[in-house]
Amino acid sequence: MSSGPISHIGTLYNTTNQGFSNMDLIRELLDNSLDANASEIQIHMIYQPETSTYLITVGDNAQGMTRETLQTSLIINNRKDACDDKNGLFGFGGIAALFGLTLEGGGKATMLSKINGETINELLLDFPSIIRNNNITYIAHEVSVSMNIMWNNYAVNKNHGTLIILECNPLLVSNMIEQLPLENLGRTYYAYIDKNIKLTLMVNGKLLTEIASNNVIDGNNATYTKKHEINVWKKEQDVIAEFKNGNGTKVHFDLEEKKAKPTNNLYANGYREIGKISYTNSVKFNLIDKTTNWPIYDGGYYLKRNKKVINKIEIPYPTSGDYAYKDLRASSKHLVEFTTNLDPLFGIQVNKSKIDKNLINTVIFKTLEHLAMDFCKKYWDRIKQPIMPRPTAPVTPVTPRPVTPAAPRPAAPVTLRPAVTPVTPVTPVTPRPAAPVTPVTPRPVTPVTPVTPVTPVTPVTPRPVTPVTPKKGDELEDLQVKMAILATTPKPPTFTFPQPNPVPLPQPILQQLPSIEQLIEASENHTNYLKKLKNIETLKNSKTLQIYTLQCEVKIN
Image (cartoon, rainbow, N blue to C red; front, side, top):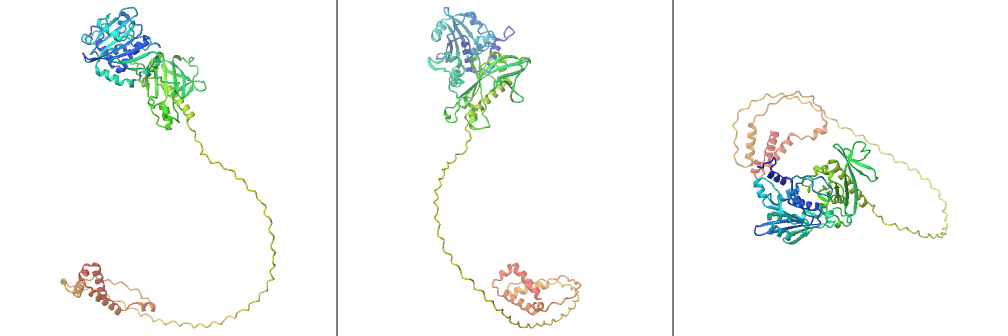
């Protein structure tokens, strides 16, 4: 354990919990060189076959450091005042980079620095020993022979500058080389590169790449660009972001009403201006030739602190509107340049290469969104194709033909008809005398003798009859069997009701009714027909014929 109130090894390990990626740690070292006003920075990745490790060197041509300055440069948490010319603030990124890139202390880190005309100074950070002893001690001294060779081989300027040497795992280096094209260092440091500051990456003595500028706004290539100056005012915890609208009126975005409203007498109401934001909107979008448009994945809000583009916040792809407008909105770029005194409102933390959108002040971010949306809508209104009516075919005027006056036709002579002969009167026809009609004598109607009411029959108790089993035989035998069965079946009792007085029927109706003899003859004819059927089995199986036969027999009886 450390003898003091602070655990040195715990402090070192805490540097690895700040969300730094390996490239973020490289950026911390680049920031330190740029803060020292270096005009050229070289990063070398050198494989060491004898130890199966890689060396990463970061060298610059700045003015260099004395031994005292070299020792104080690595004091942990040695905070500095915010400065618009420097990237450093917390005094934490340098030591975090040295410790993190050596795989959390598995290797060593050496710093060499030289001022013009003086000797080379060396500071060794033996992290394995620091972890064992839980004690950090910085002792700078004159360069050793082995480190002097490294200076001569990899120093950017042999007369002055700084060279950092890190012992790294080969896997870490290979991953960094693969991720390098995605890191877009040219976009992060474009403001420095545009001022002729050179950044070079070398692998085993061969040039890997020279970082080229990737200007976010690219005003010379954009099809539409607009700039805003946003003044940030604060009163206790209340923040107002003031800007000018298209009419030149000072307004601010109201969160409740979700629109811009005029601002009046902020200073008189107790607000104080605490910083400025330079806000630039740009887009390259063409409805005709879409191949030159900026890609959608490049669109977003680019946050630039001092001269370094810290982070990009993606623009969610719109879910409504015209498809072309969606692409325009998603591919637009919005550069947000703010000063260091606005760090608390932008949520700047130890890792200055990242910004959490959720930590940005809501008023400021909603104002940025409002201006970006207004920018895209105005440009869309300028370039969108209006809905034109369908063209109609031109109508060729018809030249009227000259009308030739027709010659008058000679009138035909009118022949007068002779006078109408008077009609001879028709002699009236004498009607023939009609023959007398002999009246038809109606036939006398014989009165119907009333029927004597039937005396009710006393029901007879049926005698038990042994059922007769039908025998196979011809058709006549089967019919006799059925009639025997019917005769032995007891008849239901009959009931006598009072009969109404008979009404005499007309003679023609009585003559149409069949007599008893005719009914018996019809029944016998039907019975003879049944006897002529050849297939007696069909007669047995047909229930319909059996029932009909029994009904006929009942009528006969």
